[in-house]
Amino acid sequence: MRWALAGVAALSVGACASRPDAGSPAQRPPSVVASGEALVFVSFDSDRDYRTSRDELARGLDAEWSALGAQTLSPIVFQQWAQRALGDPDMGPFRLQFDSNVDGDITREEFDALLTGRFEDLDADDDGFVARNELVRRLASPSPFGGRAPERRPPGGAFPRDR
Ligand SMILES: [Ca+2]
Ligand SMILES: [Ca+2]
Ligand SMILES: [Ca+2]
Image 1 (tube, helix red, strand yellow):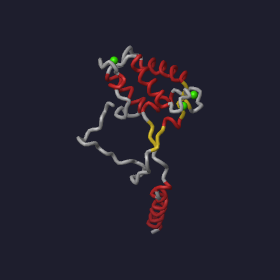
Image 2 (cartoon, rainbow, N blue to C red):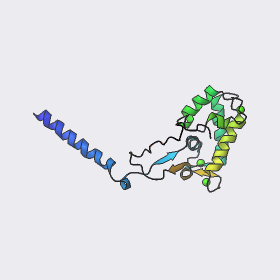
Image 3 (cartoon, helix red, strand yellow):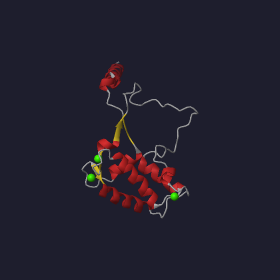
Image 4 (cartoon, rainbow, N blue to C red):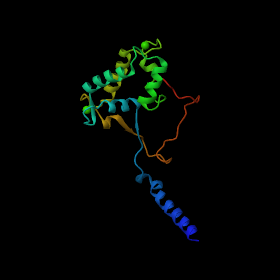
């Protein structure tokens, strides 16, 4: 009997504890997204001042390329890097965006050019630093689906993989 009562008590505590998460939209934190390159730029912040400078970008690109240990990135090496560095290779930036001459391989110059371009794009106030607030984006409105916006497929059903 004591065991059964203890079980009921534990269940009701669990129900109460989960209730705040299901509160009004105002109680939910805003939905925020960070791009794959944002994760890379955060990792380049070597002095940990929460912003990545152009010097840190240059040193970070050197270190990243050295760690890859290849003259050029083949599709399979790029895929492995994207999985680890970008968090999700299907979120971009994509291989074809790096491979500007579309020869199948990514050179150091192509690697640097794309990431440097993204850095400049993200540096919204043009001060030469990419700060954390320039790396995250709030989604337009809190989603009623627990912070996760429903996917909207474009007509035809496929998401564009290479913009
Ligand atoms: Ca820094
Ligand atoms: Ca190429
Ligand atoms: Ca900036």
